[in-house]
Every structure is written in structure tokens, then in C-alpha cells.
Length: 507
Image (cartoon, rainbow, N blue to C red):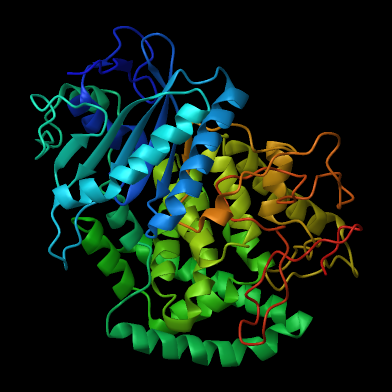
């Protein structure tokens, strides 16, 4: 072995002695799924190391760009993001480990060895980019089709040209330690995304027709304020009924069977009505309150099922159920699943502010309890205001969304805004695990720095405007100012986070 660095796994594993020491590339490759919570297929993973013995620090993941022309820009941006993020959180990294994970195309005639050679220039670009920041890459591994290669070790005795076979899952010392610590590997990234992606089966055509019919029926109604609130009430009532139906179904044997069971319990018309109705921000905000306790599991199953129903030209509508799925997963402690869902939400709609803010907060390891508390307070305020607001002899104003005795919510009070309040004006602190989602053009990975001085404020509550160049830096997200437009009549209620005026109202 050629000076392979020892490193201690500390993230997620027990902090108390004795610590687990990883001594070679085989153990590093075996550790990767436990570091991320899943097998990161088609991914660049970079892990910071700290101290003389190489304690694991921050880490990030990005889908491997398909175009090699983007690799130099991506390598520079990823190196800067990991090093700068680690410095903001604590000490500068003393080294970095790089993993390139990609399997051969099943439809092609390439082998894992071909994949390793094709990605070699990317590994070299990452090593050069980190070296330019005075942080060496101590190991760079390619993991493909059950084998691994080291790009740093020239010794064929330990790193032969044909690669080494990975240990069988669950058979290593690290796997035993992770199981003892309660860590789980949730399958591959591809499998996790498949649970949330739209159908690609004959039933998708029937679902798209149901979505078109629901759109034609609902868009004229939501243009009227009173009807819009009535549609919201109908949507939440229907969601509650479907959740009770899902909760009462017998458990399935596995994830695939469970998803198929959920799909069979929701009709095309129900899915279409829910997807169109949830595009309204007020309705979505109330649905986000199903985040804990007995509501969390059926709500997560419903949001996942609705994400799979966003077929055809309704793909952008998936941003709402995906974000809700990510929020419930994060709220219940499943951060890897939350990052996957929120990353897919931003792939469906890169400008969706609710997903942007949740994605940042989850990536930075913030406590979701702050947002849960905000949503609970919102609910208590509605209930309290309903008791105090009298519109006639002993009659409180009815809210068509939440039922009698509840006031209409004030404008501009969305969970996305509450995330900013709960997390503070700058929620771009360095992160323990940053998932940048799928590969995207290098120009979208530009690291936006916060300008010196006070951030501009465009809300009367004093919260700096998110996603501005001089606001919160967000290397994990596409560039943009966070504002949206009303959209076409076809999308109807699609947009839910409008541009905010200085007086706190929506444009």
C-alpha cells in the first residue's frame, strides 16, 4: 500500500472510545454507504478529514455531470465548497477523500474497468482543484459494479488493474459497528429516487387525462377568492380521507410492494384533485402540519404516491408533494431520504422557495424542531384568533379551508418564511452532509458569497430576502433570486411562493 492514510469514522458512529479505524481503501469503500445513509450511485462524494489521524468531517455529494466539458468547473466549485464550508464550521480540512461512484450502463457494452478509466480525468481534476487550495486528496476511489479502484495507489499488489471486489454488504467490522450504532443503509440512491419519480407505465396516460380534467375544473374556481378557499378545504378533506385509508391498509412486505399497495389505494381522480389543490400555498401550509405523531407515516406515504402521479406535462407539479415528503422525512429524523426528496423537488422546479429553504436547513444539520414549533404556533394562533374574532352574536368567522371557527390566515406566512425565521437570517453555515442532488450545469454551481455589511430586508418582519446575491449563500442550489411569477393559466395555482413586496404582501 502506498501511504494510505488512516481515518476515524466519527460521523454517526459512537463518539466514545474505542473508535473504529479505517486502514485501507477497502475499508474506506465499505464505509461510504454508512457515511451517506445510502449507496450513492452516479455520484461524486467528497469527505473532509481533520487532525493527524484523519477524523471524518463535512462531506458533499453531486451527481456526476454527463458532459466531460463541465468537469473542470464542477471540480473547482466542489473543492471550494467543501473547504470553505469546513472553515466556516470549524478547522480547515487537513485532507480530502474522493469517491466516484458509477455503474456501467446496462444497455451498453462497457465494463466497470471502462467506467474507471473514463472517470480518471475527473478524479485528477478534483485532486488538482483541492491541491490548489492547499488541501491534499489523500485517496481517490472509483466504485463500480461491486469493485473499487484507487486513483492514488500505483502498487498493483494491493490495487490491481482489474480492481478489488467489495466486501459483501453487512459482513465487515464497520457494518457491525454501524448496526450496533443504529445506522441504516436505505439501498441505493437510484432505488430511493425511483420511489419518487413519475410513473412510466401504461397507467400514466390515464393519470395525465385525470390531471387535465381536474385542471380544467379547478383553474376557473381558484381565480375566485371564495372558491379558492373552498377548493382548499375540499383538498384537505380528501387528503385526510386518503391518509386514513392508507393507515388502515395492511402492511406490505417490502418497499416496492408497499408503494404498489399505496398506488392501488388512490384513484386517478383523487390524485389529480390533490395535486392541483396542493399547488395553493395556504393549502400546502396546512398539509405541512401533518409532520409528526400518527399523522407522519400516512402523510409521507401519500406525498410519495402523489409524486409518482406527476406524469407527462405535469412534472413540475411534483415540487409540492416532493417537498412535503422531504419535510416529513426530515421532521421524523430520516435526513438521507429528506435530502433525496428535496433534491428531486428542486430538479422539478429549481425556483421553488419552500424546497430551497428546507433543502438548505436539512443539509446544514439544523434541528427541524424549530420549524415544527413554528407550525404548531401557527395552528394555535388560528385557533386562538377564531375564539376571539366575533362577527355576529356568538359567531366566529368560518374559514373554508380549515372549517368553522378558524380565521383566514394572514398573507405571507408560509412555512418557507418560517424556516428563515427559525434558522436565522443566514442559514448557509457549513454542513455535515451536503447533497447537491443530480448533476447540473457547472454555471449553476457558482458559490455565492455573502457581501459584507447588513443584508437587505424586503419584509416588514426584518427577515433578509432569501436567495439574493447578497443574502444567503447556497452552493447546493441553482442560481436565482428566489422570486417567481404567476405562471400560465394552464398551471393555475402552481406557484405558491410569490415575490414579496416591502410591505410583506405578495405580488
